[in-house]
Image (cartoon, rainbow, N blue to C red):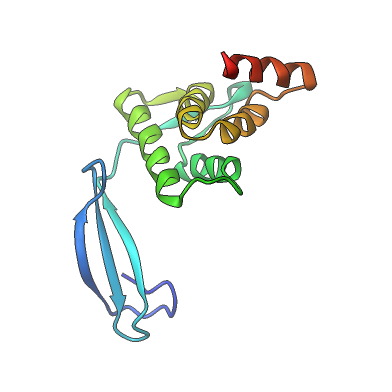
Length: 149
């Protein structure tokens, strides 16, 4: 494993343990050259998944897009990075447990919103405002009313 700091090839594993959901292994590594530490995850390679976006555009599944959307929604909110990673893993597990080769982007968006609603309501509204493309204040207020019920 290459060191992300100095690029050296010589790193050693300091600690290894299962990730929260036992579907991956979390490894703490230390670079032999610069002595900095970093974390890697080892995970079973899954079946390729195609996401069907609006307009029937198909593209390969990208976990990074889910993580980026959740990170943007949680910006300056009291949500830890570990909570964000856990949320991404929950969404990803739900997606792959469906055992489909193709999935609508709307399904992914609903899964993310469901988890964000439980995690942080402000992050939920932020995500929903972009995902549901709120056109005006009334649409925004309707979503807030649903949340308050």
